[in-house]
Amino acid sequence: MIKAKYPNLIALEDEEFTRSYSQFRILKATAWAVAVAGAAGRTGVANTMIMSVFTRIREIAILRVNGFSQAQIGGVIFGESAVVSVFGALTGSWLEAAFSTR
Image (cartoon, rainbow, N blue to C red; front, side, top):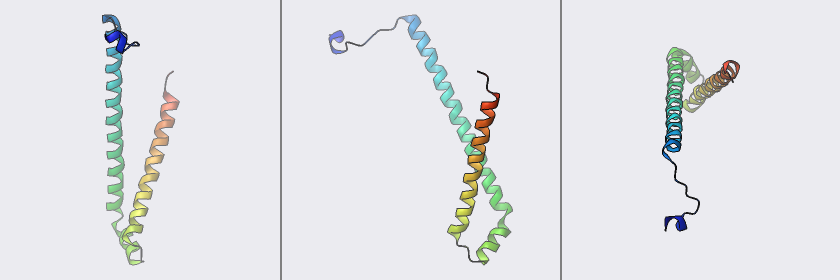
């Protein structure tokens, strides 16, 4: 009955299942590592941008006095954040390519 309903179904023997299960565990661990690294990267960028804003309060005040809107100042800050993020991603990719062993 099952064979008729699922003609392409194959059953794994113990050794094959163990091998495929261990590969799944490695994949799962890698996914967690990537997620943690991504969270650490986002936290680092957020921290850098918050410190940038706090250290440049006077500059932001001067921009406001000169007629910049809050949206324009926010655009400057978010634009700077995007540039820092892209630069960090490119640098990390370059370092990985330079030092990876194949």
